Image (cartoon, rainbow, N blue to C red; front, side, top):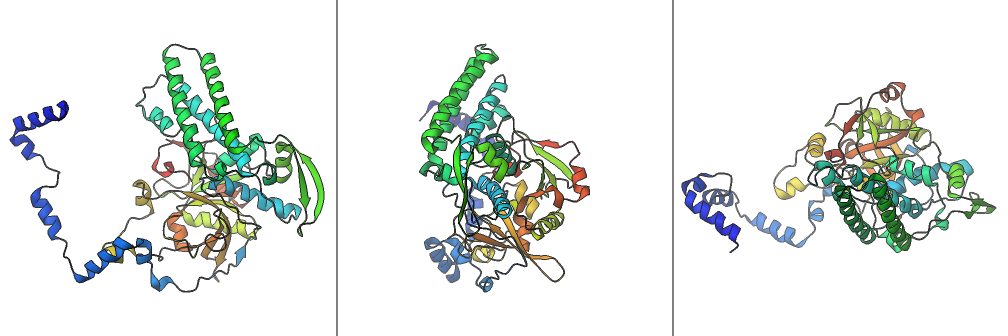
Length: 465
């Protein structure tokens, strides 16, 4: 027995009645009451056999909700080509690039167009590494157990992100077509290379703190940071390839016929086929019932680059967000959309519906938290970004269902898409990015407010998409 444990035991024995008077643990009497509350019935025995040997989702599948899925949409923006993020958390990047490519295809009447996700991801990871290291330098005088330092070392790097990250990365480094920098195994399976870079960043973060404690000046710390970024750059190059600085691009018409061969740099390609106003002409909207509506919020350190922009949004009731979404779709404009995609998803059908599963009936209990309570308790949050592309309206112009273009491949869901009921949209939709021209003047006026700053560890943003 360890010395500490022995000391504790001796203290408890000496305390005697004091230990016995403590409450809160499961006592034998309580255990008897708990176990007696379970009545083993033939029905429960059958459930035990079934649940122990099967996927709970299959057993909870609501057979009353298995009617043929309505795939007609009264308002729809056509897309050309489903993308696939593979085993990576880059949905935010695929979605942001897909919004831009849809505009490029329509503007130039192209047969198809796909921007290189790995090119943008390469610089996203490098910028995030710098953001972490600079954060370590600026918090070097804080203790390791301070909330901010702890958050930094828990989150030195991730492959998740937001729309503002897309805007900042492509605005700074431009775009290239997918054929100029194709995917690699490591870009499609990011966990291993991300874990290695994360380990290196934590190691170098500790070293920077030690150098600061030894009295090294800012110039020396910046020099060390730059050297570490050189190591990260090499790791990224080995995993993802060397980002091109110039390339040729073959332009093809809607039938796929070659029209011209253009020579580009990433910046010139972005200026022609991307959206140079990606950040300035869009408004980020949120439906977060845990906070006051008609207020502007900003999440501290929720950005992809040190000189980039934090996520800044207007919090609005869901119905007002829907009105802007419908206006955008009616004008053939897709949108960046994020939600809690794993909730009530029937992946085989590609259907997000509150009635897909009946876990309450299966388990003999009810799950009654509303959207606000789920956010407060970390039970729900924005986990995945997709491209909102369609809505089906009833005779009164009210939405019945919605459809998104996903980035899980053409064989996932409904032909690479997900369809959601309007009721599901209410409960699990969180973010929408809308072009300014679809945003009412009263909402744009709200953006003049000084944003309420929220910490990076806020429940709503603890698990980025």
